Structures are given as C-alpha cells and as structure tokens.
Length: 185
Image (cartoon, rainbow, N blue to C red; front, top):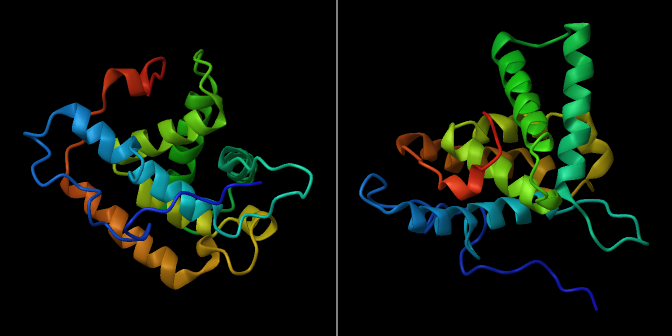
C-alpha cells in the first residue's frame, strides 16, 4: 500500500520547533536537523506542497521538483515577454529561476527530493522562501497541477505560511557545507 505523508506533532504551518532560540550559538548540525530533520522545515514545506497535488493514477511518486521546474519554465518564458506586474515580482521570479537552474546544474546526483531540500535550505539561508511561496501561489502552473482544495491555492493558508517564513529573516542561517556542495550560488 501507499504510505501517507509523515505526520509531525505540530501542523506544517506552525513555526513552533522550527526556529532555533539562539541561532548564532547553535551548532550547524542542530540547525541542519531543524531544516532537514524528520519534522524540519523541508519536511513541513514538502507536506504543504504535496497537499492537493494532482498525481497521475499510474505513478505513485509525485515530485514537487517537477512542479518547480514547470514554474521555472513559465517564469523564464514570461520574462522574455517582459509582462510583469511589478519590479519586485520580476526580481523574485529571476531569483527563483536562478536557484532552480543552479541546483539542476549541480554535478551531484541528489535526485528530485534532494534538489527540493537544497532549494529550501538555500531559500532559508538567503531569506527568499516567503517570496517564492507567494510567486508559486500566483503561478498559472499551480492551477493545472493542484486540486482546488490544495493548501497552495488557499490564500489564507498561503498568507499564514508566508508570515511564518518571514520570521526566518531574523536569523542568520549558515548551512553545512555538505548540504550545498557543488552549488555555486
């Protein structure tokens, strides 16, 4: 049978337990656990993105990375047409595309889940995650790849998630070298 998503004791949108109380004195290893551990930020965002994701019946594996690549292609195409709602939006779209491209170009064989983990870690480090969530929530690709009940289509939940991710800006996040090896960004 197909196992459902892992359940953490706290809901994915809650910031409880995700943020270190003293990030500057906290060893990098424990920060890595908060990001990549069983109930860490990567896992929470993975559950948020998997919620309401349309999956073909034949294939069990649904990769969020496939959705992110389609969104990247959309934004790159859009950028060439120069139809952008605002300057900030343009910068966010360009940043998102730059990170996805850099991760796809890494010589490491980390798989699609590994690429998603790397994107979340780099986004946390550079305080870009809340921008990317806003960008992806408004992306037309989301309409095609997600059910109407999906978290990413619920403006109230998306805004709550964005507010939680904005709190990461208060922290200086230094990633372990092993997490970002082979990435030049």
